[in-house]
Image: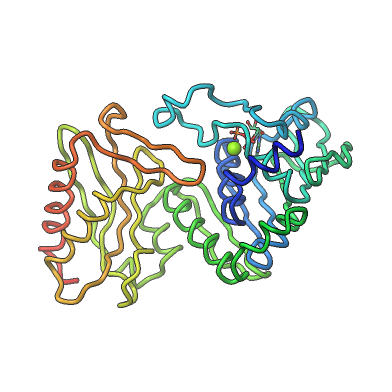
Length: 323
Ligand code: ADP
Ligand code: MG
């Protein structure tokens, strides 16, 4: 069982940011309204995620770390329609196989909580403790028992940057949740979770981006897009400022990326990438989701309609302002 977990862990757990992704998605699935992510050494030596979600009961804590045990959905087909992010039931098992894990958790109904320690897939201890409602999970020394995999990690600063970037995307995609990110004892991000998009953009990107952004709204009989578009803070050509979500999920789409850049380029002489926070609502039957443990690619049935709508929508939005 342990060997199987270690091999399979390669798919879900590639680097510290994939650990953070899985754990934060679990917190979101647990209904948390506040999530704190703390990392040290780029997440390689230390990751701590604290949420105020529904917690894990004493009866369920051990099974939560068994592969293919999920309390969520059973079918991958309705992935995009289902609201929960996790669905494979292998994240905790995979993470625990290659690190030292400590969980402190309590449900609303239980009087006492539980502290559960599991290292390299082996249970170390399980005890009752007093703790607040919700879950704290600490991951120490990722890949400590798989040195070959550990060697493939990049420098802590690079791994930390991946995590930071991922949390930004997630915070922007969940504006009703307050995210706090602490990196080497410094608070790097704290969103209010007040459900106001502009406030969230401000929390993540700062005053300048908010000031230089305009709302965008595209309505169509096939889909709806709302959000903001604006000029990036810096002139360097990086795509980190492009964010788009389909039915609430952060996804990758070449066609959207191209439409955003083409729509924006009409305004520019220099080649830069705009800031975008786009929220696309579309009938799930009109899209095709390619699910991979570490990424999510979406293809549209009618690519050209999406492409043209975004491109001209951006052009229209920017025509009235000077950005
Ligand atoms: P999945 O998310 O695909 O179900 P995971 O391995 O990520 O699988 O988690 C296993 C189970 O552990 C979840 O189905 C859930 O019941 C429980 N769980 C994990 N993290 C949390 C959390 N932060 N709060 C409450 N329950 C959790
Ligand atoms: Mg999960």
